[in-house]
Length: 163
Image 1 (cartoon, rainbow, N blue to C red):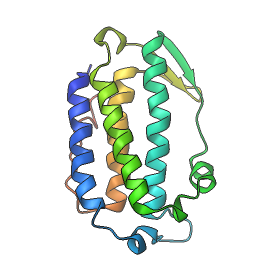
Image 2: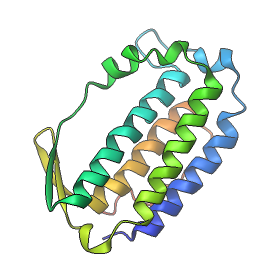
Image 3: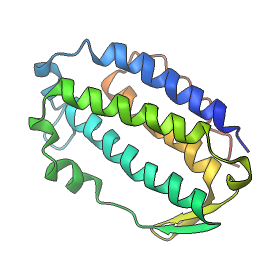
Image 4: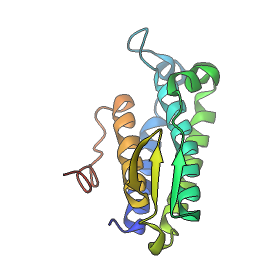
């Protein structure tokens, strides 16, 4: 089991480092797609906002009951439907930062006895809540590396639960 304050602190560190680097990208750079079928930095950040939203629900709902079945989501559709490519970069940054800092707060204050609660996602699982929380941070770093390949994001939790 991973201690929630450690996960929360790691999330805050990643957000802090990424925030300062992401602010250096201008609107034009944030709009560039590396290939027609690949997401731009705006779209990646939009996906990370969607991920924060979905994980917020996973965290709180799984804290509330011993097991929760959660549906998956069509991430490409979500990104396209919300027109992240046309959104203002500073607005996306602000929303992304605020949502992740709130998630760090939720994680930090999760009742330890409820971390063993489980969740199934689109039929996969069950996964322990503490795994979902730690994996969220790794997922965030994975996508931030796509925007910021030089950023020194360490993988604290990458192998915590994997055999």
